[in-house]
Length: 228
Image (tube, rainbow, N blue to C red; front, side, top):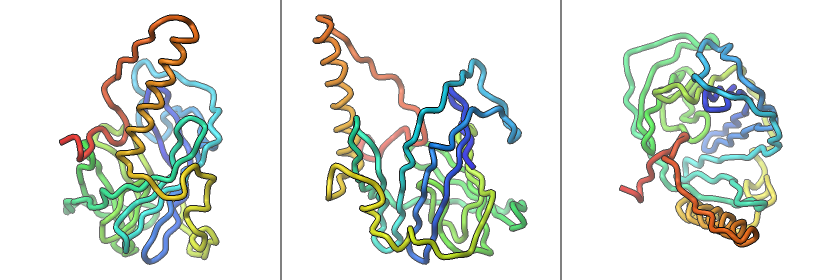
């Protein structure tokens, strides 16, 4: 379960499918609900709630052999297959421990694209995967959150069984615009251009000039390696 203490606090569920060499992370935005802080955290001051109209449930694949991540993300009404090659995450493992869902977990920290992450992993399950893009520890990540606890991800159930989703071609899990994946950098540039064109066309329709001012970046990634 995920808890997002953002301007519109919400919670939703996801599923992490794991094989020996790959993981597929299925974000179920369609399960999103307003969040009341029941997991022990407090909502941000000035928070608002909005109706859930999201029916978009994308996938993200982490491939140990290819050392890459593939995921789906939209630009306008079209879905694109994107490749993220920033694979390595340098973790610092601590001596801190706690029990989560009956498993002894160890604390580790990393900084990934400008955000500090804290993760609790279970060496008893020696699979180097976790929610979202987090991976690379000597055990399954049971819990993860950023330093400000804006984003929190917690494992609530583990099942040992086969799933047909791991046997499918990842490209076919969603309808996409491109057959070959584009780089994450290219995707972000194309999306930014699409937004600029959208505001420009709206201005032309209304015979006015609409100036788009970019706000400071927020989210789970705030600084990219090509910007350094």
